[in-house]
Image (cartoon, rainbow, N blue to C red):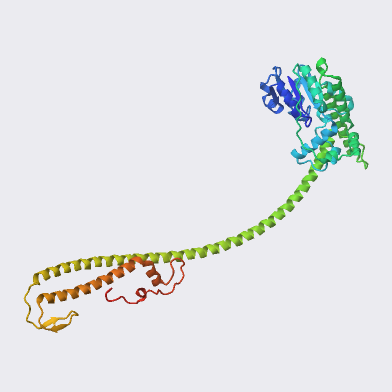
Length: 463
């Protein structure tokens, strides 16, 4: 089985592309922790890759806690890649700045305090004497500056074809990296000499083509137990010194041994996090006060707008009710006009039928009395209806009387037709004249100039 211990920010993406072509069953450390009980580590073609919490021991996903067989089983091939310490620190700075928002400050300040991906912490190397045992525990320790040689050496050990390593650069940079002066670079090297010793030792081994495939590393990671014992002993000594100082109630501070690098970095990071959280709390309080002030102003404005809208809505409702009432009144007037028109039409039909019947009777009387003898009465009826003296035949008298009746009847019919036409063709004009307002604009209109509409009383013929 191949195990790739991926220290963050060491070209892991490019390396995994090659390993995936060799090991189709390459799985991640997080998946392996869930499936550890069902996976056979001796299975051919099995590959395991991951950050392993960037620790060898002391974590559920730590390398030796997750795969304890690596200590004694040399058939497992173990790979890791290192990087120039300064480039590694700069890449870690931008990665943590994007992912872990607790990282604050400038690049130079970050380079002074260190980062959690450092080689000494990831490999568990407390001092220079443990560099060689640590590097011997890996089958191949590569270099990001020479990835091709690193993976070619691994290919020879695991018996895989050599593949050109793709150049995949993921990450961000800014001018702060280029702006580092020679003095700042020199200060970084003096601040972290162990990182450079580990990196230079790995480069020398890679140039010489040294790997553990020749039988080295049979006692892998034995130094880890020694370093853990040394750290535990140091902690016990520290506790004893503190206890002695408390018993003696001394007024001077006793010289304490230096804390392990890991603990020093964690304490410094926690202090920075506390200061950053305090600053964020102050900023949050200021923003909260500003937001409350803005919210109160917006609430007052919204209340004023709401009251204004309510007032406008009430006015609109009143106008709507008035208009609706007027429309209903006009509809009633229109219905009444239509009823009157129907009644006049009915009367007109009745009068017309009477006129036709009268014409027929007159015609029959004229035919019957057309040759009757003349009357000896000297009284006759003038065409205007006044009696005159002189003889007149009976037929002529009837004709004169009927002609007068028909003339009056035609006049009455004409008046009825005129009234019906006016009611039928101008109902809106009559309604407007009666109400005194324009139905379209609801404004007052002047009196109609039509003499028929302005008369207060109907004509005798209409009545």
